[in-house]
Image (cartoon, rainbow, N blue to C red; front, side, top):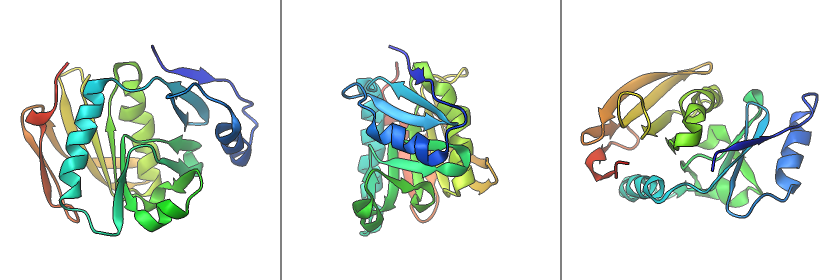
Length: 194
């Protein structure tokens, strides 16, 4: 199944778009995001996708601060880019997440991780990093299982406007290092390959 988009009035305000996103009854288990002002409904990720997220999450728990958490279904809002995004992993302060109703401001995140799915890899490569950078999220890890040159992991940082600088890239089978405050090496050889 591929992702689908839901039409909305282009004159809708951000608040109206968020209200629509919050109040609509979506298919059970689907991932519903607002990407560049368009509501996008995606199927549940495949098992290999989830295994990659779990491997990264397990490693992150060994290095994050006690007042941070790692969240898998937490929506982050980027109103300036008309985005309500649900990264595969978000590292953010636990208290702010506990106090949130349906989402947090994206600027609270310290790290977001996206693992591409074949049907919507473009969003993870183009639209989402622009929104995450615009929000000032310090680090973005893209695990791109469907990259044209083969599966790779790329760490982005130093956001300026809506652009990140690539900090490092690793083909699957190599290690990629996350800088401070994580100081963590992730071995991509643990990731399943399609």
